[in-house]
Image (cartoon, rainbow, N blue to C red; front, top):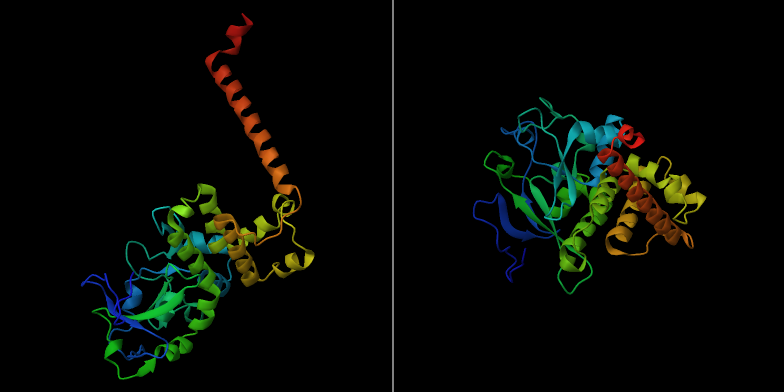
Length: 301
């Protein structure tokens, strides 16, 4: 999306629910959501919520389940771009568009609600100009027909609203995820299409923190990467520390940034082992093909 000189946003369809004006932290807007507003809970019955990595950590901890169970029970995967970069969305109830956590009294996981829910009725947009190495955050209002919160008299700045909703911590811990996505998209042909394996690693590193912990502590990983005991102690039970390492790992996998030290000679040994494995499989496949073509009893004759 492109900025115009007057601060308006170009290329937004006229049917969009986004009010096309770029807001900054000190910009003011009117909005208030509470049980007394006539549309209370309406937005929770028509959701399309993409989850960020720290959202999943917050929710799985709140529900006291591991990330594998959370993903299997409460999410559906989707592709974020044409290169099948994986994302996850909150699964709705049955054939409806209703959030699985909504109750007559409001959100059933309010303390751990996703970032997108905290932002509503604001949206966040991260943009990086072609000649810059950092991204800038801008905000916009989302105005849906059913929402009466915009008719409330409460006026506040974007910064005040974000603070009241506990958003700064969420944004801080999701920022590197957004930066990975932005960098991958802005790099285009320079990076190319990630392999299936890279996308699988991205999914695990960003959304399945408990599987990532098992992967990072496995013999195959520890024999390649030179990480000390202090690191392994830090990730034993700290999901945030594990997630931050996942960000570093994906910078190395996707962009070749050497963010994690490697054991001397380990990569060469691994490549050699993989080559031997592939050659072994090739020979096994040839043997299988031969046996499938000729019945053993016929050869004995």
